Each structure stands twice: as C-alpha cells, then as structure tokens.
Image (tube, rainbow, N blue to C red; front, side, top):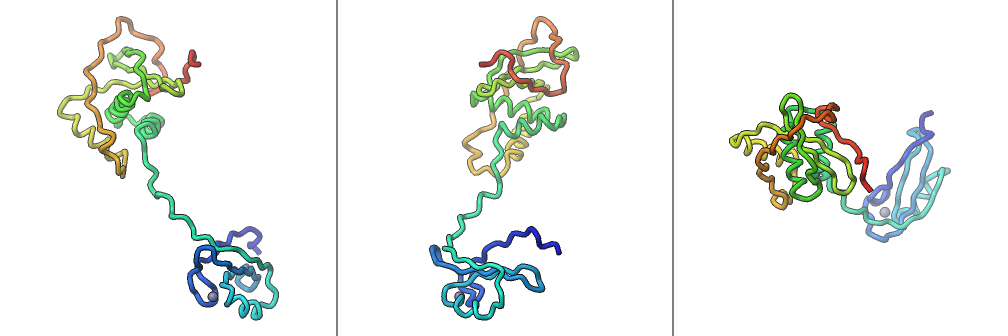
Length: 204
Ligand SMILES: [Zn+2]
C-alpha cells in the first residue's frame, strides 16, 4: 500500500459530461478508494446527482467553486546580467573569462557595480575590483587580453547566454573600456580563486 501520500489534481472538466468547468461554477468532488487506489472525480452539479448514486462509499466528498487557473508562468526565467555573472563566477569556467568581463562592464554601466580599484597579479593579469552597490560584495574580475576583432564574438556570446530575452535591445552589450593603468605595486590580497567575491568589510 503506497497510497499514503498522494496529490490529486482537480480536473478541469466534469467527470460525467466532460464539459469544461466555467469560472466560478460550483463543482462536486468525490475521492473514492478502489482497486486503483484513490480516484478523484469532479462533477458538475447535474452530473453529481447521478454520480453520487453510483458510488458505494466515497472516501470523501466536498463541494468547491471552480476558479479558472491562472495563465502558466513564463517558462523561461529571464537571465539577468547579474545572475549570469554570479553563475559564471561560481562555475570558475575560465573559458568564459571574456564573457564575465563584458558582463561586469555591463553592470558597471548600469551602475550596479562600482569600480573601486585595479590590481595586478604576479603574472601580470590586471584585475578590476568592483563593489556591488547594494550588497557591498566585492567582485574581482580579471581583465582579459581582448582584441578588438574578438569583441563582436564575445558580445554575441553574452547575448546568447542572456537567453530568450524579449528586451535584449534594452540592454546593449557595451564596448569594454580601454585597459586600465597598471597599479604601482603588486598586491598580495588577490590569492583567492581565479574569481573571487568577498563581502565588504567596511560596508554599512
Ligand atoms: Zn457534468
């Protein structure tokens, strides 16, 4: 007996006459235990009068008012530049270094991220230090050596990753800024992961 826990959806049509329920129409339901386990039947008022005579011992009966179900939610949750950036940073996928950088620049243009500093790693990679304007998190974004002829390709990749957006035009992929000036001193605070993101220590 594995019918202890079960969920039975309400039908959208009458069990008897198979007519779709109208919005605000009363319906009558019976939950009957039989050979097939629990079976739920939802009937219109007319059919219920007949149906209830045929059922020996309904497990449960009740009456409700049918409400037309809301339109299904948009199946594709829109990816935002920020959620995509966080996701890619979490994955530590170095093949996405250009995309991550372009996304960070996008968010800087949108004033979601503020550039706080530019650091240089020992291998010479420049790292832009962004702060999330709302959360105070720090985003360390390595600056890729992006040639101008690669740019269009990366921009297309960003657009593709942002997915089936119907407002893609509202968020144009920006040109990246010119390379930042290298810092005077090599920092020693960039030893964490390839990307790292730390809570602000002096925020709030
Ligand atoms: Zn009916």
